[in-house]
Length: 204
Image (cartoon, rainbow, N blue to C red; front, side, top):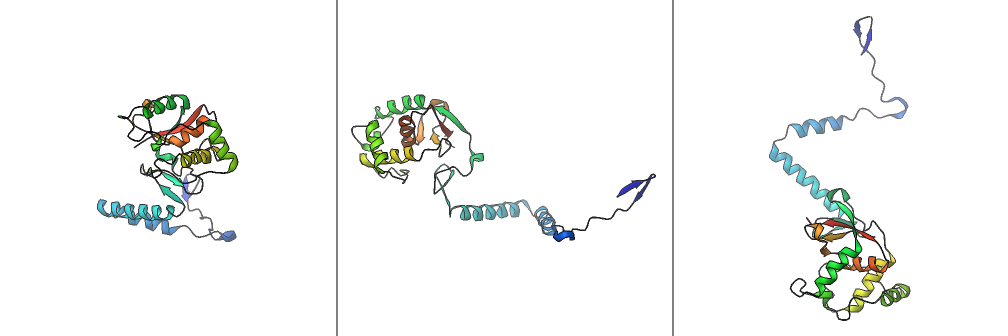
């Protein structure tokens, strides 16, 4: 509408079909009206269906860890950073807590993944990097107990393909205690690369 001399006059709406433009998106209006007419239980059921479809589609190119965080299968980058609070923590502080835990059986039931002569020496890690002996497989189920060379090659993989924002370390609650829940290989890779900080998030 337009205002002229104190009277209200009709104003022509723009032609949405001009220059190839589509009509107004009435399907969105119908969807809003349909959603508003639902009961709370029906709305919750529909939300669950939508989330299930979204997770099914996402699982084709990403993987969900036990903390509910999605990671890309190809490069380990976090998919939904909005769901977690990620912050940089001092590598030296995390290492202090982690290395002490490996010497305390009551705190760590399987220190150093059941391997001896650990942590690996810098030259061992670098040799694996230089020779291309790297492991892209994650160790979420602790399936490589006692396999020292595998763990060196896993660290070497993270050194070779390091990304400062990639795949943050999962920390136990509260994060202020600097105690790792998942991500020890990344910590060792960060130390090898002489990183000052590493991205971390608190376990849910």
